[in-house]
Image (cartoon, rainbow, N blue to C red; front, side, top):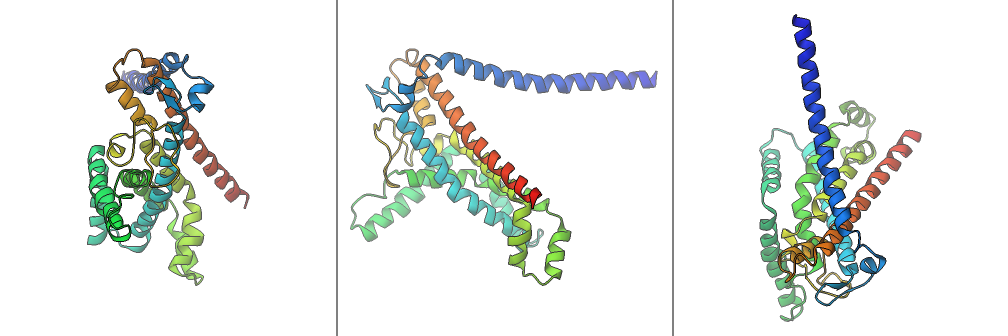
Length: 302
């Protein structure tokens, strides 16, 4: 009887866990089906390659696609190296139980729990008004260029938002590198930096790229941090320099769904824009995944 009861409980637990897993997959599949079905008529080449017109109800979303791409790239170029360096310091150069390490980890955990809108307000006050305004006052005689919302300030704000994700992912990857490898390198006469550069980083590159993937996934769809720092609703041209404002797909969806005079009439455009945003995010993620796979293959071959 006891064995039979254990088998029944095991089957129930298996059925419950499998059901929850398939439910998650089913929900994602249903959402994707609705997005594709709702935007299928608007997803044309002209929609992808043309500039907007007629208050965003005509033309296309090409500037929003390019703006989102540039935002994510600049955010990743700034955030991933900074997060990697921070994780290296926490894992390689400071004792885990030191007060400084605890303070840094507390700050990282606090950043992870701050609402996105707060990052937007911080970006407006610190990057736009303090740094940008200071640059204009000191170097441009008060002529406003950097003291206004720009794609640079928006990307830096997004880098701060995704920084905890990168730090945690990279630190976990660094912990997976066997300590014996570090000790062997040091025993052979290598310095601490040589050990980190030649042993630790090559063996944790997969985790670093995983952090970049998670940062792209988190940052590509966020709207709140860029509301005050650089995004614009209607700009029928591409950003030509870092001091320009830009269009962004997530912000475009937000405006079309909340501020449009005919939300129902623009529903197809909203679905199509959402699908483009998902495809762009998937493309960036798959590029990082492919790069991670190639690096691992080269490491195995070597």
